[in-house]
Image (cartoon, rainbow, N blue to C red):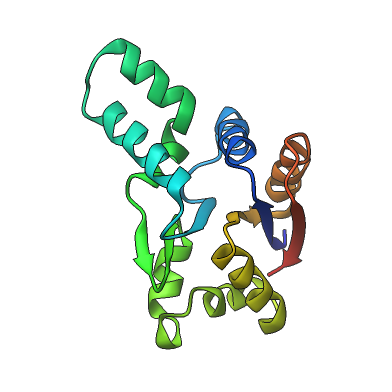
Amino acid sequence: MSEKCLIAEFNNSEKFRTAIEVLETADFTTEEVSIVTHASDENLSELRQATETNESGLSAEKTTAASTLAGGTLGAALGTMTMIGPMLVAGPIVGMAAGAVGGSLMSAVSRWGIEHDVAAQYEAKVRDGSVLVIVTGDAIRVNEAAAMLRTVPPTSLEQFDK
C-alpha cells in the first residue's frame, strides 16, 4: 500500500485544538502526526502550559482542563516540541528536519513528495501564524485523517503521495 502525507493548515487556535482532539479519538499517535508552529505563537504557550500541568499530576480539575485543552498523546507532543529555526516542531518530522541541509524544516518534507515551492508556501504560512498538522502513513489511514479533519474544518487541506 502506498504511503501518503496530509497537511492541514489552521489559522484558528480553537480549530487546531479540536483537530488534535479529533485525531486522538481515532488513536492517531505521535508517530503518525507532526505539528509545526511558529516559535512566537502565543496560543502554543497556553497549550504547552496545559500539557505540562497535565503531566505534573496536579489537581484533577487542572488535569481535566489540560486534557480537554491539549489532548492526551498528541497534546503531550506539544510539551516536547523542538525548535528548528523560527519554528517549533513535534512528531516524526523532527528527525527529518534536523537532518535536512541547513536545518530547513520544509525541505525535510520533500521526502513526502512535496514540491519545494509548495513547501516554501507552507513555511510562509507558519511564519504568518498558521499551525500545520501533518499526518503520514498508509493511504487508508491518511484518508481517514483527512475525512475527520474536514469536519473541523482547516484553512487548507492537501494530500501528497510519498
